[in-house]
Length: 302
Ligand code: OGA
Ligand code: MN
Image 1 (spheres, rainbow, N blue to C red):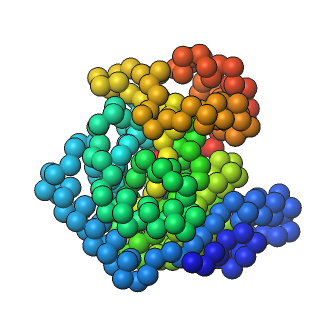
Image 2 (image 1 turned 120 degrees about the vertical axis):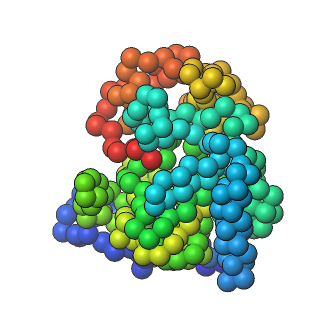
């Protein structure tokens, strides 16, 4: 295993070092991104064959409705847990994402557990019993994911991903414009070669947006995103109309909840989400306490 993270910025294309602010951002991103090569060429081929199986299963209607989300240039598959995002949200905006009711998406396929998650645990990339949610994005050439922060009230950190099929790049701090789709110069462009495992934490996950630009998907590319849904993440009820705000997920760890509730990270996450919570008590009031009005939220539309 080769760690290409941290101060080694060989994969980082910098914007302008003369801008102190930008420079600090670049440093903070690089400090909080790790990249690893854990898998052999043969193993990558096996993963890609499995992703192709998933695509075929979805086409034949083998999955639950919420497992599959099709858009013209990017299909998404959720396993273990799925959530509402972007235009699917009944109430839009950062902080409004919701887990689907328990059992709405298919379980994590056993191959992901056996040949992907276990080796990542062995390689110390993720702790044991961390991953309870898988998202697979399958991008066609020109496909993209607009600038966003993975919702911090839904997902623990780090955010872990495995890139497949072709080389791409993850850009930080881009502003997107539409019709036609285009985006501003990134604060940092991180290469995502086929096979790379990338983890985002702290600043890189919470304080700056990331995206995959259309120009960085030259041929079909897929990513397997491995995440941990937080035990207190808000969830839609069966009817999809109201919140079950007291559900503690089965894999919850009480100490971890306390940790999160009292921790600085928790405060940090919710600073940027505060605008949305100003008049809401969707977490049974728990959050009111933490909702300090703060800076303009970034773009979170995915
Ligand atoms: C995501 C994401 C990046 C990628 O699905 O949240 O940021 O590498 N994906 O495709
Ligand atoms: Mn993301």
